[in-house]
Length: 417
Image (cartoon, rainbow, N blue to C red; front, top):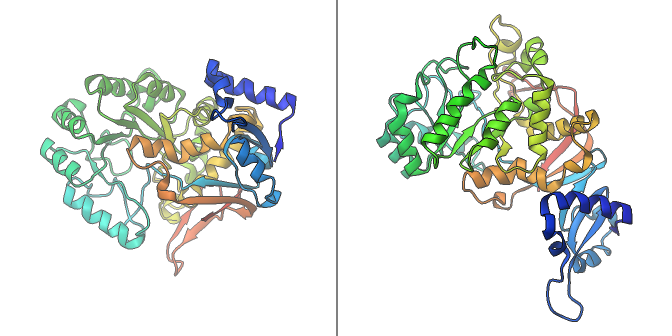
């Protein structure tokens, strides 16, 4: 660790001043009234800038450089030169599993519309992997009444997923009109359940808007009518969706997937393994999502929307099912997308800090769902070790294969600490 040069210090302080303003001086003020008070300083280690107590920085000088993973709060780093990175365990706030060889959540057939079904499904998931905290949801359906919402809240169900009818896989039982669910939304607001929205309309709008953009007035209306209802616009895919979430109050947030950070519409239409809903849009939309991730805005957090389908159905059928499978490498794919964005000049190197990565991948989502933001102490270590994404993952007997997105790409290796 070394002090920053005058030029480096000026660059970092100018960046911090954009957020801290006149409070900048307080960040480096004495921490006590002793004769030699401790205070915070800036230090550089392995292409990362840390905000750290001077006493701790002095202690860090006794640690061999190669062994020092972190010290204080990382404010900026050069991602391309970062060989190892320790983070809180990622919180994936939107993921599809399957049943049988692949468990299925939440848009299974038939959908989960009762508390008993949700709890039974949770128990099946726990039997497969007990070390994951599963936030269960119900499928919004005429059988979901205000009384069901009361029961769901008492049972620890996290939210209710709203699919407009016909917008995606297994959504035939979805919502036709939000007016039909006014009493349900009001009870969700009272019980503090989250409304998770697949934000698209089912039919092509006549004015040439995308399905997502055409849905956004519904989001604004729901927020206006139920201002305390926590709402998540899932898998944002347009610049307009980012703006819409920001225009709403603090009870509205949006998830962003890994694949929408690197795919565009032409890729999704030409490669069946990249086909998903909402369909990725223009490069300008992709770049707007990248900027939202790097902004540090707590309204946006990670939700992979990873949806596995048998490789044979993705590549061998005339009707390709919607869904991109990223889950085994989801965190790494976010980092890869950010590296590619830096190379394109969409964001600067110092826009990608450890703090912002932690916020997007873990802390902001946990806070929105009112969970401990430290992941229960669980942490992961990402290391560059010549790992590449394989073309597929397979069952033990190789009877089932699921194709992976961005196969062949070099990514960080990941292990639990």
